[in-house]
Length: 201
Length: 110
Image 1 (tube, rainbow over the protein chains, first blue to last red):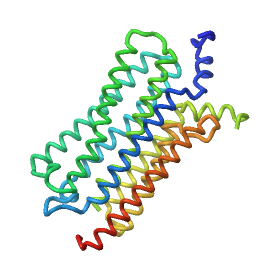
Image 2 (image 1 turned 90 degrees about the horizontal axis):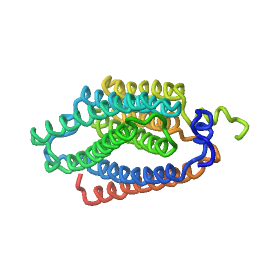
Image 3 (image 1 turned 45 degrees about the horizontal axis):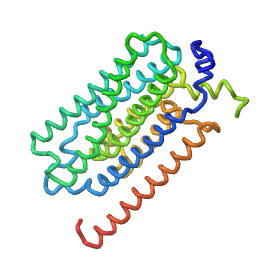
Image 4 (image 1 turned 120 degrees about the vertical axis):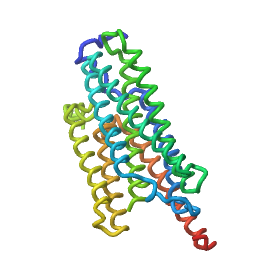
């Protein structure tokens, strides 16, 4: 690279230009949005097909849902703090915020797996009714995305370890994971509103 | 748009302020949704309407403050792809519900 990007100013100036890799990742997220859209459509069609089995009102607990939602929401802002640190080139701080985000996300996945295991043990598994099939497919697809995000966070922490500056390539990776992580939070807004809260009315 | 350089860089990068505003708004909107459902003060259809509006507002808040969507010329293609996806998803969700509802009504399966 001909110009120097080590100073914070030059770096900020550089970040101004939309990078093709980030745009490509944005397009991927939009296709992911279509996957979730179709799963929401399936859930909307099947949400009353209980087949004599348990309903959402009987299965869902608002306290567990509130805790899951809080973990994901807080992990969004901790990742945001990580991005702010990345723009300042503070590698240690970025790694710390990524680790905090990782544990919040891990807590979310743990609670979700616990909830699923509890439901399956009660006989309310995905094979019980069309409603539960649609529920498990939609919510676990989101949970799987969060799990992939966790692997990605660990990967970036390992890549950052021992480095002292954040080159443009690493900044791109952090920006794309930021988009991914915040996108999953948006999907979760729709999940807790239309899957959980709407069933508890 | 190019004259407003500082505002652009602020929204594009998302400073601590932008994240804090977004986070506070998100917490308020989420808490409002939960309280409306737990309070049982509205009718069922009214509750659904209220939490739908709150969810829609929160999605916009996240898009602006966390995903840093903006209306600068640079973000034009991001926005184009986003709007196309939004239209596509809206058509097939509304279309699916319309067709499946109609089918269920005709087959008297409800």
